[in-house]
Length: 311
View (cartoon, rainbow, N blue to C red):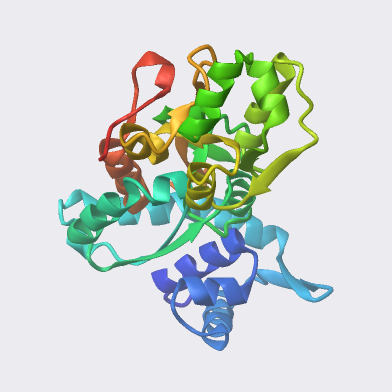
């Protein structure tokens, strides 16, 4: 048997994880022909056929799948050896992280600053997405990590709790003042004003619908927007009522630009996790998860429905 390169083993692992030679080339910062060359070298050294063509795709053979399963722990252990030398500056590669808007605009920046100081050679590709899209990309290997709303029930994903925040029904002060003057109940206020929420795929949408259901209000007229900051501005401008994260509206509430819709309408808790694919066990991934838990502004008390005041 010819001498085998660890780089070729790593290449095979990424092809298996990402599903194509092209995706592996992008991940490893090289070209598709280079990836193909590494596979040919590995096949020649082992005397095995690792891939066969299935339509327009290259699929692992039985021997190829067995090799991938047997070598993955070895590659992870090799990376652990490097990281165990307490030299995180030696870590390198491209890490793809998905994050929702409510985290991206609050404490995610300080987290990334800390990670870049600790592991300066690691390159990050950040995608701001809805939880439903991030979960799918994690399962397909298109993301390495994602900070998503809980619960996360996919068998192929591993989730580490980060805590949670409160969602509040808020409106402009004039809306609440008029409701108090007219002695309107919660159901009447919800039924007679424009309602806003993140679009249907988000975890916030069914929480909004449940509040309306409890008060006998139809959810058919909910207006949706895919940007939380825009909704904050619209509601502050008297465009209606919205279910919004407490951390995004705290400063406007203090300035009386927004108010809670009603003292009788309780906050809605929403918890979060940082998730990875079950196969992603590299030391650099574990270190990022540890730092995320440390830097998270979510609080773990009160059922995970609190948020540190960042302002």
